[in-house]
Length: 406
Image (cartoon, rainbow, N blue to C red; front, side, top):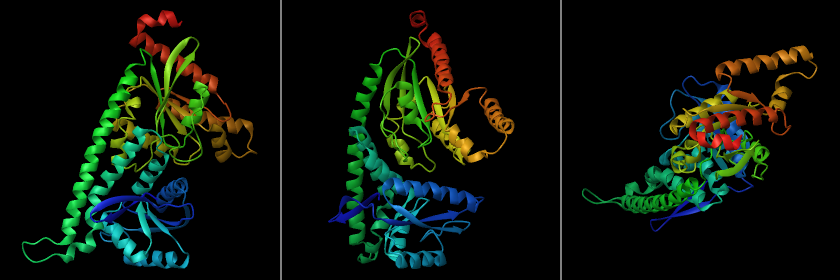
């Protein structure tokens, strides 16, 4: 489970908390115009995140409130209900779907007697477990310390009342300031190290020559890495878990004598911690520098339209939304399995699929395609579309190369 920050003599020590034996309960708040169904769907994703980190979600709690309670996030009655369940079922972990402050975490843990984390902390833990390269490890560690910094006061809250009189400083304040200085120094050091790695990465990207660059983007676990393997005939790690890919992988691909660079990038997710986006901006430079984006969508997911919105918003934050984009609706086999009765007449089935295609072709000005990577469905059409787009881009970017390619 993320990292527990232990305090010894004013020093911050990171210790991993989530174990495979952890039994967790999930907590979500229904706020504003949200519905119980929406929050239930958010908790579905939170359960998948917990599973990816190694824990098992065994129970969910939801409460409808106008605003989160400042001290314990949920109301007193709901917290007591959670406490009784936690104690009766030997629960070892409580995960909130929304971000908590340091004092909220401390108050909740004091009341429940078990480790409490929020969605951001859980995502940071998954990234920490999956980081393989030096760049990814530094990026994750930087995000962890940035997440920790504003929560230090809450972590030391139990010492605040131990101070002296007017003009004196209590041990709580002293410890907080010591830890703040340590964390700020660590953040500064990590930023410097990351800057050096970024320079090396930039040099490597410059050395790739004059090739059109294509990047696969999309929500996490939509099949980008599987598609990368099919298009580039390479062996990029992929599995049915969130954030299987953290480091950008780039391969040279050739379609009908036309070469281009294809990159697989880290998946996006709703409520992605801001510090994580900031830290991974260097990795996401591959997206900013791409000439063409293939936005892969899991069309079989019940909230695929919301996921499209999350990705588009992230692309806007990265200032990459103005690039040519082709939406690749993946997992059409699962879409038909989930949404079309197997006993339905072929004519009706084709009509349902036609309406789906027509709707998105209108919304994307024809820049979309429907495939199944695992079933190899419509891959030839996808390759043809990519080839056409890449050749058009060569005519604009590197016109003197086009005669050689064709």
